[in-house]
Image 1 (cartoon, rainbow, N blue to C red):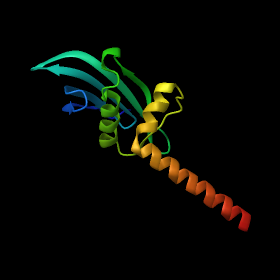
Image 2 (tube, rainbow, N blue to C red):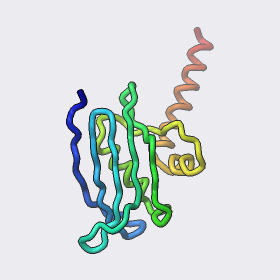
Image 3 (cartoon, rainbow, N blue to C red):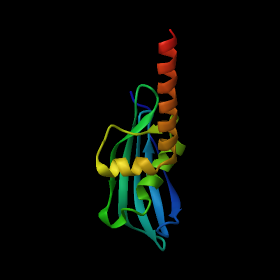
Image 4 (spheres, one colour):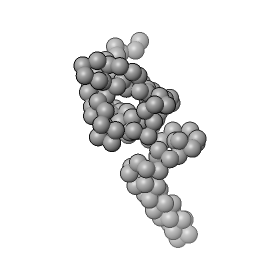
Length: 134
């Protein structure tokens, strides 16, 4: 039996594009779905995008589906959804196995990605050094 989902919403402002966005979300123990909708005045006018995050066995979360409407790309909508997910979930949001160009460009700009890459390289160097000694 799955626990009941927690539904809610938050209003955000994307400074880069000067847009107000409502993030509707549904959170269970293993899934988080985020839907971004543009707000003009007091009306929700158009869906900007959606993202579905799934919890893996190691406790990390990755995005299985991310879609941003063509009109709203390069405005920070995906970043907003990822940052929102990181605040809501009980683990880390990590890169999925998706290797398309959009995904690679997105993760290359995220500060957490760069830090993780440096840490991974340091650990690999440490393991090589440790293996040579033993």
